[in-house]
Image (cartoon, rainbow, N blue to C red; front, side, top):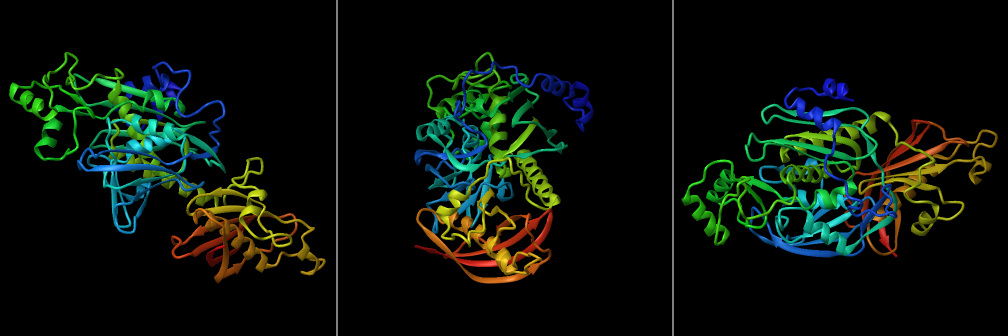
Length: 503
């Protein structure tokens, strides 16, 4: 393992430290219980919140007071922010491709709206095993609270986390993925692993911080080992930010201040006035006396917290070992983009969705029967194996006993193309109904375009039905691109338009 780690790493900076971490990924004691998990928590199922929960606080950089609400969401929804204070209440998906600013936190922008400092909130959701959540906010920035994820973890615990009737589709990293920023001396790598774990290393050339590392071997340890760790800054950075009015919501209780250079009485007096404290002093350890450290390596742990939050923007749950040397929001987001591109390319290269009959489905025939009005002989979807807010993959097993083979080319049974399209439509109907929220709905065809039949479907074939949203659903109109695969080949494809009608 040691020789492999040395040979694989593309650059030699901090090589000795890297070797130490690869051999000893975590040196802190692992608690007996942590995180949102228990003996009954199934990591291969999707989870959401039991009920809406809210919290209020001030944004660190904007100084704007905001109300934040976590709401339950359907399977495949992922994490989405909603600016309820803006006209039309625009939604912003937690997606690394929508990041527009990483200068003082991570900012997303879409549909004419922005939301910033999202990393601590996303880290809490990931760390507590939540997969689907609508995050409502009536301001431009997440509340900073105490500078950690702990207040949001406590909020999630107040609601409770519930298992959903949908499988969680993990994406494995099959080869090393590297990111290197020479200017910032940042090195990051994702390596194949059987679960998701992270190691961070920091070195700011500071006599106070020194060289620190932190590890998260199991995501279930996030609650106790990482969530309480607060953001930090150096005193000279704090002075610059204050001079430029850039941390309007800064408070004595929401950041660790590191003092690694001599400070005169004038500066101390100013800090005393800003923090409204009777006494401001530098501790012997080199930290301002506004806060007590929760862990000796709290800064390194907070950097790990940021990595968890920023990598949530990949949009896919992954199994990989992440090693991040000197990470920051800019590098985290660029790394997330590389991993996302790898996943999308890997899926595309394979050509078809992966179908493993031994894996439990996202939805089985009983759920499908509840959602769709189709019955024998027109029930043409057996189960759903993938589901997100933009696509769905279903399965139709074709047998010799199908009713239509009696009259469609007797002696040379071929499944009618129109029924293949109908199977796609039913699969897409499940996605459309799932995205429509509460209530009972039906879907009706409006148009079929660009329909092509490339291969015959015969008895014994397993049809993989994939439907992808072309545009977001608007006014009940749903446009999808459908593809049928059999044996790794495309048999049918078409563009379908349907209308969603509430019963």
